[in-house]
Image (cartoon, rainbow over all chains, first blue to last red):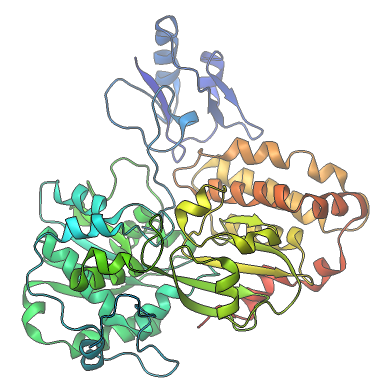
Length: 89
Length: 421
């Protein structure tokens, strides 16, 4: 199953994704998208693709591969998170 | 040379206030790093050495991850220590730099790396490493080039990907992962990024082995760790303790608390608040994580009766907000909103409104940044609300306390630079 990921660095809160995929994406208090933990269903996949394509800064991506996700389960639906981030090594 | 298994201190052997341990003294204290290091990864794994920068990741597994990649790796020593309540890495570089250099050389030998970069954030540390390098015999350095680089860029410069960016001459901004530095790091090479103390510990394991390492500490938290003590303690500074020692024992080693104890901040500005009962807790990452806490890079800050947990937390979150790279919306907006609420709680009169969104915002921003800065701030605030609930409710109802106006606690510890060893 594909998974949605948000690149939080690129995202500047246009909010189109939440309009096109309200089943899985909602906006926080400041207009930035939050992904539901619920995985995508096959029926939603076309909508998810449309939402990703509509992002003006390509911050929303629909990924098929088996790469381990980076941070953030709400930034990566349907896959376990590997820990990283502010580990000062 | 004495390598008695239970002798303390280990890392801080020969370290005194005045001069750094020079190469001759280093060899007298620790012996020479063995010329060949077969099975070092295995020794490190059996020793159970974990990263001392805050992540607590098994060092042997990190080495394996790097060694499994194509291309000649680079070894990076992270001694940037942007955390205001930590002073241990600075102390290692300025007082016993050869231990850190040895550990990095051992890692380089295992990985077949020809390059070691030591990232420091102070001129004194850079100078200490430079002079240490000049004291070392030429042989080893012909094969591995060791350099020290000054990295400025604040708190986030210590974040792995931001550090790679800074060392590459770019702005110290965290990048989206993957790729992780072990895959694509400095100059696109597989890069081992670890904390200075981790390398220093590895230097000793390379000499004496895993069983020697485990002769001190507990099964869960073997060996020793450096702890920076600050706040209401008689002698703030860096101490070395056996893993699993109680916080009370660490405080006692620093002359005890200087005031009746109100709370303890573990792990630093992005750490976890606890009440006085934490004195019986064990100083080990596994032990503390089981209690929902963390040791971070080895930080114990004591909040005395004259301090205020609301003020200290407000100060820390505002500082983290200012240190934010400003790249991710949830971090920029969330930390500001949280800091504003906390600052409002310090004001006069009824502030119950300021309380309303704090917990929701904390859960809202968690895991939504490219790095873990917002997660750390959220964890700090959540733990403060949990362990010092009464103080927060008091502030919401009646406004700021006397301690808020007095600005003690974390803020004062930082201003006094009382963390410097």
